[in-house]
Image (cartoon, rainbow, N blue to C red):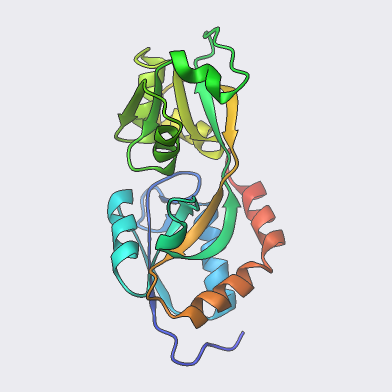
Amino acid sequence: MQPLEGSPTLQFYTEHNPPFTYLQEGSREIDGITMTVVKELMRRANIPYSVELIPWNRAYAQALHRKNTCVFGMNRTPAREDKFLWVSPLFAGPWSFYKRPDSDIELASIEDISTYKVVATAGYATAAALEATGHKKTLLATSNERSMQLLFHGRVDLLLIGDTEVPFVAKNANTPLPVKALHFRDTVVALGCNLNTDPAVIAKLQAVNAEMDEFRALANKSAPR
């Protein structure tokens, strides 16, 4: 594709969040299924960019406040909708409540969590969504791995987390795999860009992204489990 005349170099930020984005062992190269899609997106769009992996709160703040700066993969939620210009979807990202394998908790609807203590990761969209339900017995952890450990240490009854991350988080947390207790909601993992980013650049990226469903499916299928 022909380059967009006068297109600025975009600055991308992401976080360590396997299998979506992570640093390869023994190198500083960013890998993961979302990184694979973003690389292909930018190659097809022929737009210059650089990418850096930093903690989530910093990545989010940079994209929120700096022109021509974007963050991925970010859950596209109603609370964030008007704060960014979006290129989406990069991937689907369903969320669910998980329990320990020996737990006898049975959930039929979101109302059933009311008597249970639930952990989510601070700063993540899952935590904001849990808070929005009005649930009172909530614990916020510093990372997905810490959330998983708190579940298996018996500090909480349920964990709210993205389905795709579960096997990777459990491995990194050195815990068994939890059991899905209730599907919470379907979400979209996206690229969110600062509101002062050139609209023509966003339009071009979105047009290219719309043609990448087959590539997306292949990237997801080839991801390690």
